[in-house]
Image (cartoon, rainbow, N blue to C red):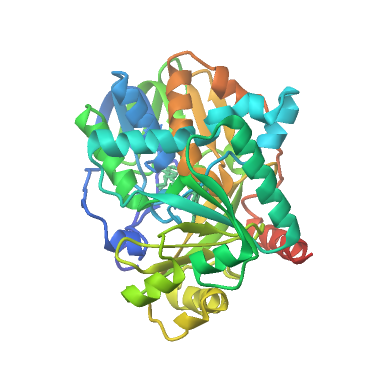
Length: 441
Ligand SMILES: Cc1cc2nc3c(=O)[nH]c(=O)nc-3n(C[C@H](O)[C@H](O)[C@H](O)COP(=O)(O)OP(=O)(O)OC[C@H]3O[C@@H](n4cnc5c(N)ncnc54)[C@H](O)[C@@H]3O)c2cc1C
């Protein structure tokens, strides 16, 4: 178990295999520009708010609260950004998954209900990058590509909606020829260019936000798996070596959460994987993505890619695989990458990694309470970079007593799937098979 510091937590539920782990072997971990090392939680501590989990949800919430003057303590099992937040495609995708279901549940119209909320997370990210000087390779520009005529129709509908809403950034439909010229591949028959979306280095963003929260007085503990939450007028968040007593607690463990069975039963943990090539030559970059755009395909079993700041192709997608062996991930993803870019057949792959996304059955992000003063939010499907940042603001509002936006989500009942966590692998494999067939129709 080299590099793993295993803790069998006293008092922990049998379901919690609590181990603290270093970052996965991702391109992001290899290029983290600020190596932080927060001490584990020790002894008895006191806070206004205790946040469990230091991904985007937890750190974004902590920063929003710290900016409003709260004394926040964040308790992370592993490292800041260790989960999906430090491993993802880095694509800033607009919109909130499950919008239609939310609007239907409230008997309201999607456009009227969400409006600019659909891009609120992007605005928060941009503002923080500027305010705190976070170096995370933030770039504007994103394309939704079309593979089939029905995707073109969806793109046109999106375009018209954005026009109606007076979207303040450049949005343009690209013809088949323009798409080929822009992306150097014949895979797609059209695209929607959106300069309001973009891409970034997610781990460096998460760490930068953690630093910002720390600079405003927040305390962050790493390598501190929470093993119990004692309920009460003040809740007590317990780890193997310490505890934080707080007026409010926020659970932000998402798909990695192992503490509260109720939260695990309403979320499917779905794995996604990414490979990063060696840095590409200027000539190759000019032929495959001269405008440095993030690219996402429209399938349910999606593929997504973009260039890193040092011009590697970061190519992500699903694999028929549940482990984390980089060689297996390379084997499975390389053919997908070379289907899109045959010219990269001989390109070396330097990094391969995977992570787990929290996917609710109805796709609606899950906000709620386990007790009056214990809040949670999780399950943004593949839109987490944007929506976690909005979620942080909504959670901070909820702690302060403003629950209008919190209730927008909390009032949509999550669909409980018995055994969702325990039997997730066969269930997810079946679902993926079903959606693969659907994607091909
Ligand atoms: C491979 C991959 C690619 C993706 N690509 C994109 C993309 O391009 N664009 C996009 O918008 N979204 C993408 N996503 C989704 C996005 O990354 C997530 O929705 C988002 O990061 C979720 O953030 P989070 O903070 O809620 O959860 P996480 O980042 O998973 O953080 C949860 C944290 O909680 C901690 N934790 C759990 N239990 C405990 C405990 N008991 N005690 C203490 N700490 C605990 C974990 O250690 C972890 O650090 C991708 C996800 C993956 C895995």
